[in-house]
Length: 81
Ligand SMILES: [Zn+2]
Image (cartoon, rainbow, N blue to C red):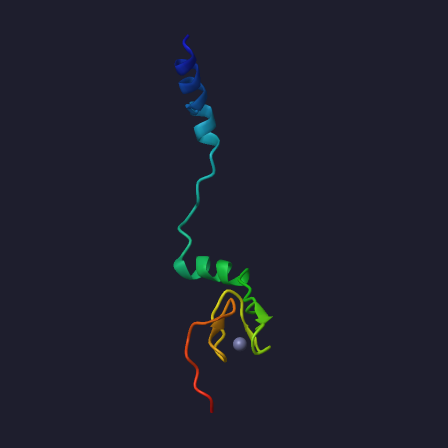
């Protein structure tokens, strides 16, 4: 038996093993499946960091919405109020 043939035999499921495989008794409805996924869903708070320019809390890796700075460069023009 060649090496390739041996791998093919190994990867092929035996008939007895196929009979043992679990088979769903009935279809799980969209509602039931969605309910199961929703039960494990947890919303997480946004990651905020202090802006080095204006020391306001801002989302990380985003241009500061207050002063328009990113990485020490003014990217968006902000008018003084
Ligand atoms: Zn800022």
